[in-house]
Length: 380
Image (cartoon, rainbow, N blue to C red; front, top):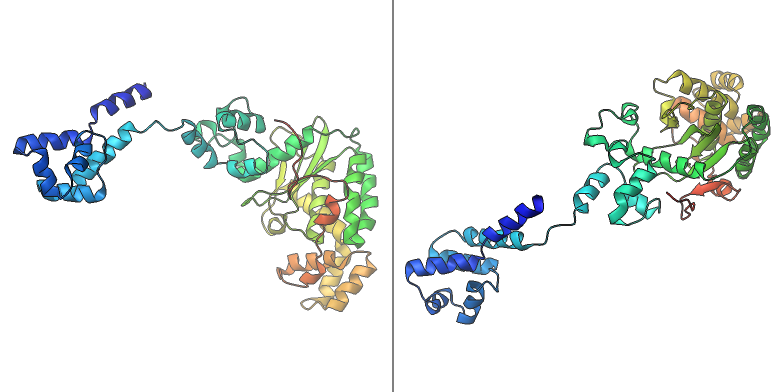
């Protein structure tokens, strides 16, 4: 119906030359007369009158003076004709605009999560988000979004795309049967690793042996996301972004997600424990699930009883010497102590040099990761 109406409209719109000839007849002007008035050749004018040439901005002004009308009149005639004769746009333009306006589709294509095949882009998103149809994709549901459970939980589209990439990769890998007892035992093996940044390389193997699918996916632009915990086929999944490439943030986030797993959080449908910004979360009102996970993570990084005593004795001034001594006494890297001091004092520039980067170690330690130039080869 739309294409038929467009064709009819195109047939009604005449070339500007048609209207110029009508005006010439009305005024009794010959072609050579108008050419003389305009100061152009008859051949140039004939191209316009025959519909073979268009009216430039300069010609519109000249015609305006010649017929004592606004030059916009002729410019608008030309524009209307050009629009009527233009080929209809790719129908995918509106669809892509809608999708890109909500999800970071262009970046997802760049990261090779989906293919740059515009003809199948809608179907690819349906598969990527594991939806039954295009209208059932979260945030795209009838373009209204009011019924989306993810929107109600204040999960941003970029975070959701990241989550589904973690989920997509998780479904493609195999792990031993999950054992809660093994995971609790693994915590004892993880604790000695807190002394040196390079020891994080052992984390992927230890979690895999417990039946935990551990996946690292680089965050998308504008998406604040630290980690997530959820379940696939009775197997827990821990996803991390290493958004803040620091030893304190890595261990806090990892232990936080492990606590979610140990307590069975995130097992229900669309109940993923998504942790967007753990550094800020500790200062906001928390759910009970997040509170217990934060407490477990803090106590793992630095035993809170000992840290509280250290805090009360040394505040408000914490010397570098005291921090290092306290870290050695508790078999921790100084960065873990610094991280807790920064969080509690909100002095985010405190002893930054004691917060080494760890991403290079964990990625080369056998971790399954997507990003930083690598793409996990999974199909939609």
